[in-house]
Length: 409
Image (cartoon, rainbow, N blue to C red; front, side, top):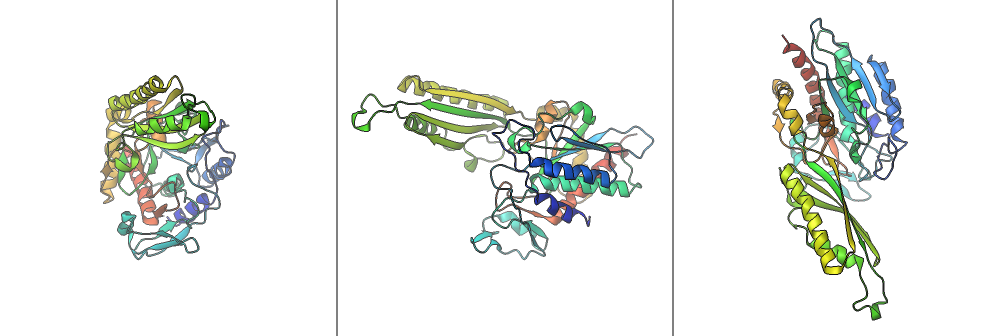
């Protein structure tokens, strides 16, 4: 475990922010910087069949050490970070023996990580926290998962007395922009099932996620001198505003939880002659998800009837709820649950209010529940992770490998 923290700190210092507007894979050239380092490290710790393809997908094998046939399982994480917040020049801060009080991330800018606002902090008093310096995200999503997987593989390689089957690991680019599994070679990976190490707090174990789509509304207007605009001007900004007011005001991220779905408007730009609104649609229930897409079409039709044919709408599905593919193999969830309980970790089985590579991989033939990596407040300057949570994640990986082997008669 002594290498876990320096390993993680090294990873987060490499900028791997992905770009949703890029057409390449990976979407940013800088993702290669960490990808190449990871390949070298996998060789150094004794992994076999280490490979990286032309799209920066990394795979490697820890061979089994048993005579009997054991299922090949896998562990997956992603090395890109969110485009929502800067990942450049990350300067992680280490808070040892956290005292439960406010943490000043950046004195000059008065940026404070406070348990009065982020109540989860209270659970980590006395532990070692890794935080940002208030100017970037940290990158625990999902460099913590990578550090945990590599540390677990190194531990298993150094402790042959722990019996396990063949283990495959993979690290992917571009998960944060929804493309992490797009070019993943499931057949080459060759596992019967896998786990993404991409969750948050200790104990999280998830096999349900949102059905997801993105939508773009484009309004074309007509610009006329405002002094002579009556019955002539078509203000695209005003129509965009009308569109937004017709969305259910309570069905937004800040007012929903659990299995409640939402519409999330994340970008607006406009002038009189053209306005664009971008949003995402999320719902765990497939029927409700379809209804949300139909509502957007209904609003478009209503506005076109009111103003004329000025509003267009495109909707693109992104991923589906993996429960459909994981539930028929529920024993893979039970193995992870048993692993946690054997380590005195209380499993928190709940739906993901988001998506992971695992959701797409499950529909590609690789059932893939999600397990905690330990971080909090992802995608922003208040992101932090307790070292002890990362250590527990490593132990869970090792225990899953051991249990999978021991349950085969």
